[in-house]
Length: 295
Figure 1 (cartoon, helix red, strand yellow):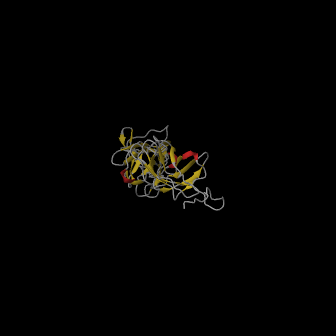
Figure 2 (cartoon, rainbow, N blue to C red; figure 1 turned 30 degrees about the vertical axis):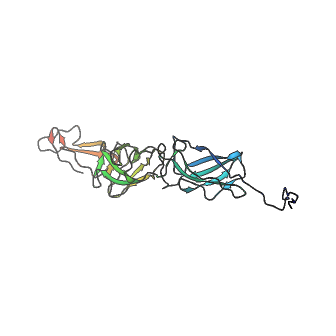
Figure 3 (cartoon, rainbow, N blue to C red; figure 1 turned 135 degrees about the vertical axis):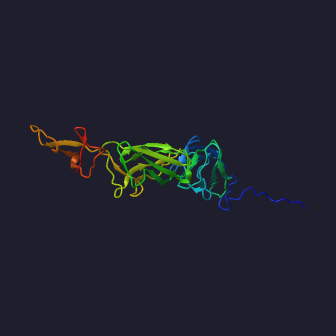
């Protein structure tokens, strides 16, 4: 017959669910540090995002990752959220000017609506990542064990960087036997530290004393290797950095006498610090005549 009922225009509060028909959206805001920098091991990389309409109260949907690593999500204010990634040893390296930074970032609202996923930060918007601290392998010392370096001799320590990494620099002052020494890169990941023995440096006994050193490498990002603090006994030479000194003591016969043919003139000398075990250097002469030396 065409009779039409009254229209129902609403379902009362308490009798129907709420409706959230607006999925969160994400606007990328910034990354700190910015492109042009390289984050190293233990550095934090903070990504700041802005929710559409500056929506607050959103949460992370699933695990948020940066560079493949689970990262910390936080709401800050005014619809801004941060994802904080701490670089750990062995994470993937990211080259600042060629590699995007891989991420997985999704927001969720109270109704369960999930935003589209951000999967990367574009080249130019994020820093590089250097997550591999340099390592050092000891290679050799010249001269080798079994020798003793004396004043003005050079002792050259050769080290090899892990993975034959090139372009590393010295971290701080490199020392050998407590003395600042010269650092140089040679080739194929090899580096040398050259120590010149100076008068008064510490003596090192070849077969009982390790050679104290302080050697650390640093990469371009600022990652610093573990320190080498000594070269083991058997891998380095001894050091004798104290030139003998002579104190004149006496001559027999003394002044006031005259030695004649076949007489002996005996000169007695005392070595500095009463050092024993010294020998004659070259020919010892008295009055131009080769003479007999004895300790």
